[in-house]
Image (cartoon, rainbow, N blue to C red; front, side, top):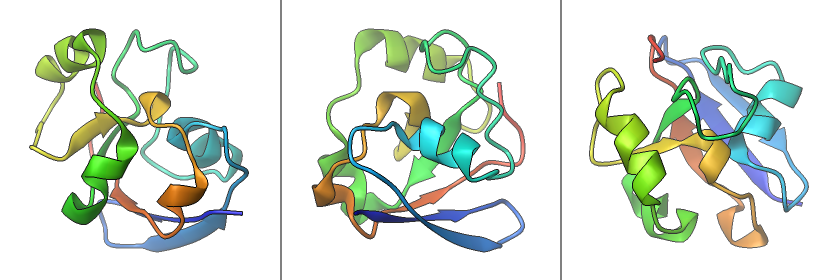
Length: 106
């Protein structure tokens, strides 16, 4: 069971366990992680589940689709490690991943 760490914009760490196969967004919502709004419910249509993945984990999150990149282009404070958490599937390989949530979504 992978363990994930979410760090919010105030620096608060929340470590949660997850089943593989869920998205980071689903895990965040199930665990009441603040700053993950996910208005579209994981359909890659709104960019309100934007996160920053720690650089050493980015290569393990899979490629960014053209649609995801388009949505990120309209997001606030996009960084090289930005991802939409609805598009990152939790796998055993992501055990220990650290993601940060921005203070503003959309």
